Image 1: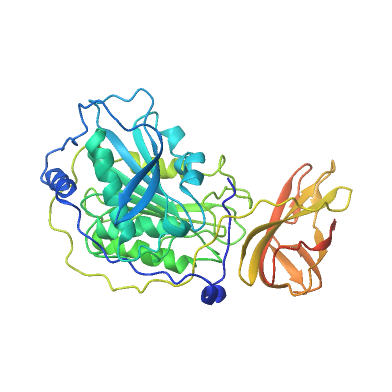
Image 2: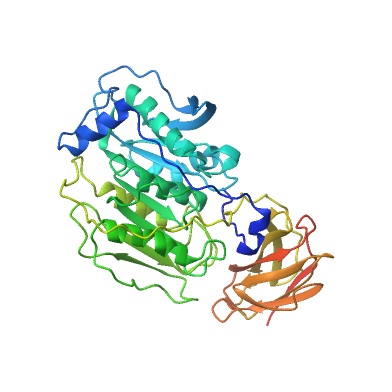
Length: 438
């Protein structure tokens, strides 16, 4: 699944203005289940012991007066007398429920060993603006439908997502702290609102140090909400340096029992699938799915402690009005020059008045490349506004890009990438894309 995307804040005027969430209370039956859970009794949902009528696949549901949908994945060999973990996976802007499901719910499905019911809701306009709390209502309605039919462990509800999906997971943590046990927010920001946001929820934030779409400071702000709520000791976690191609995960100390906060910063841009030792994201090689699964699976099937949470109310952060990225179209890159060093171009994402692109530099020879330079001619009206993992000369017309300090050495049959955002129409690919070394 193509997921790496980027969007500069300068195009906010062309993006959809994101409305902050206005929360709604859970209906009585779901609220009573949550209350039973927090009172120290592991509450069995109404679906426990029943022959299920739901099945895996795309489901429709009436929510807030609209027809909505979600994809449901029930474990193989489902046992109606076993209480299962429930995980919601929210998609990114212009992504879809199908994207999340086809990628194994951010890679958690193959790790779950049939212990988990997975849900991928579909957002209106492929996003999570959560206008008037409509997407929180969808979360409530889907939860109710599933728990009335299937057997769910009420102390094992989780949510996660990337970019806009991360923003929606944060909104769920803020507004449904007695429902969701923990959330993971990948490259997120306060885009879907934070109704409430004063109660503890176990929290795992993941963010790239040079995220060009949603700056890492936005992810730190979300994290710090739950550092405060969970009573953790404030600190500035270590983060990797640019060019290190690594990640650093920090578990906060001093947190209220049962409410950990974890933070992972990685040397990379706006992606859900960073890979240590590589500048190319990869769903099958990323470390994120393993760390997220370990974070979620640490919680035993018991209720969290019921001692009073901290009383300090975090400051209100206004929603960010920059839209997160869209699902990238798949394009066929034009070939580079023949020889040991080749360059292929692809358009990753487009929006009104701009686009994001990526160039892969490959070494097809038998010896190591020690430095490379890519040359290309941008179409009329196109101009580079930002570029990463390379150093460019020129921003329009004939442009050259040489390697950064950390990715100039490319082994035999190896490759590296650089990317950029640009103004103009991204429908026309650059001409004369070529690579030379050194």
